[in-house]
Amino acid sequence: MGFQKRILITLVIGVVLISVFFVITNSITKYTGFSVSNANEDFKSCLNEQEIILYINTEKVSETLNDIELIQYFEYIKIKNCFRDKDACLQEGVDSFPTWVIKNNKINKDITSEELSSLSGCELEKG
Image (cartoon, rainbow, N blue to C red; front, top):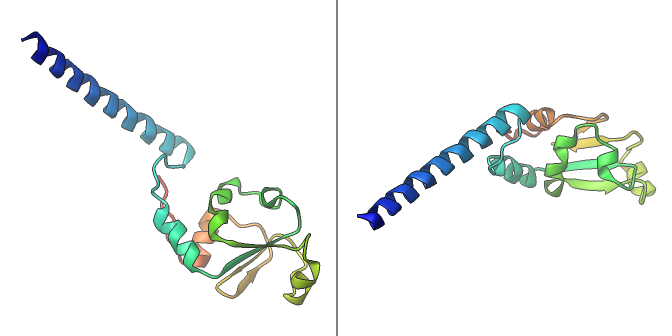
């Protein structure tokens, strides 16, 4: 009976630990708005399929944007650095930064992740 009792105790401890993990991750999500899981994979995939271009004029993209949350989506967005290639940006008529081109619409301002979702048509999951 000692062996079965240890197995039962181990299972109970495992269930408790898993429950605590879910409570903690849920609390983190509610507090920060960021999900511990990969809930935004559909959003990222959708962004990747769109023709989205971000024009910047600094060496570091993060210095151009106020919404730090957008950094997690940079690999799904085409970024053109006008600091390095001024002529290409001038040909596109880009003279203020950041400038976003989303679905052939030019947005000459910093945007939030919610605005990126709305403008791109990609659904952003929160929490």
